[in-house]
Length: 125
Image 1 (cartoon, rainbow, N blue to C red):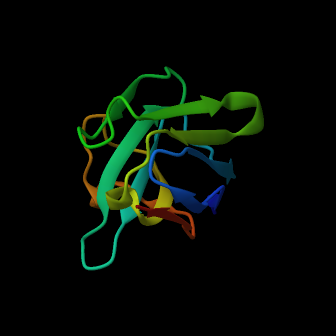
Image 2: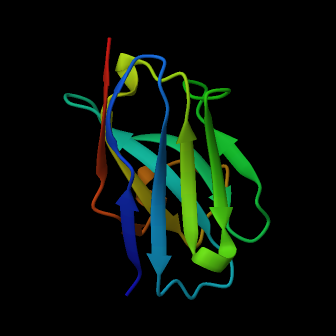
């Protein structure tokens, strides 16, 4: 069973930075996408960014483009989300997830079959 463990969340003032990490284990698919999503109070879970694990191609939601960077370290089985210029509206629980069957451009929550437990990010104004 795929396991995903996120870390790196915390509290930061607006304009600050955080780097989230997600260590993946038991991922045996030949090709897959890893994504970051977030869930804010009163809102639905939304796509943030994703990366093709082997090719390294990425995509971002417009709300974070230019501020967040997704990357991966194949040797460490880890995907990162570098978050800069954070805003209060970035406050949410951030989740990493695995999409084993659908393309990079499919950002639907439903195509991600495996999820981590989430890490809280709080940005104060």
